[in-house]
Amino acid sequence: MHHWMFNCHEVTRLVSESLDRKLPLHQRMGIRVHLFMCKFCSRYRKQLLLMKEVLTRCNESDCPEDIYEPLSEKTKERMKQALNHFQDSNHVH
Image (tube, rainbow, N blue to C red):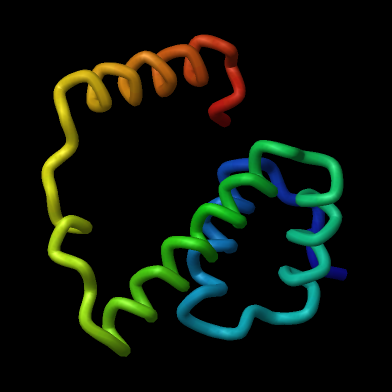
């Protein structure tokens, strides 16, 4: 019998892998169960899928040049604070 209950670390790795290859059934089912219970991993999966879609569209057509604009210092600082808050909340496994 396969181990199909995954923790957040395993799910984020497998979700990322699933963008490149089809996962075995037991892994797909384990991911679904975890995503049903974990809003953080569910959000991570949605973000990965959105990034994949955006990058696919950019490859298929001309991307606006402003997509490559560097982030402002204010935005970088806000992102750092959000990541620190997320890590401090012990939601990173």
